[in-house]
Image (cartoon, rainbow, N blue to C red; front, side):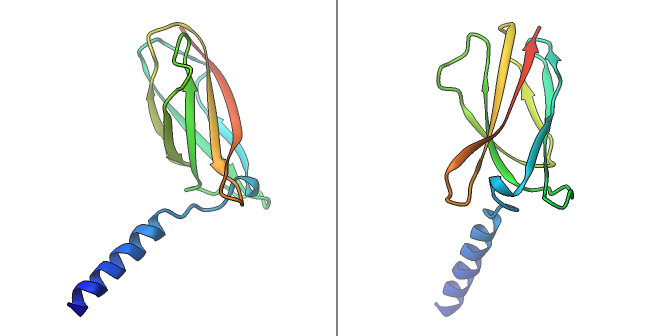
Length: 122
């Protein structure tokens, strides 16, 4: 029974450790590499980059993003990502301007907007 408790304790510690981010929203300068135009229905890749105050790139900062597609829902889905890791996205079929909004937890644990980018679906 003691062995089971030790295994559960180690598992919980590992899970909680995996949820930690490399920092909070205020600690970084944010940018995103994504195309200015995408074909409707095409898959494209975006990469969020975070740089600390010393100018060094920091990977693994957790963020969320929403894409406001042309003729899309007023309540878009939220996706998770980590800085420095490519995210594959499939464009919707409707043409027009799309906006992607990135958020990250601040020091108080609240999600705040850190970056907004626009691209065109052709």
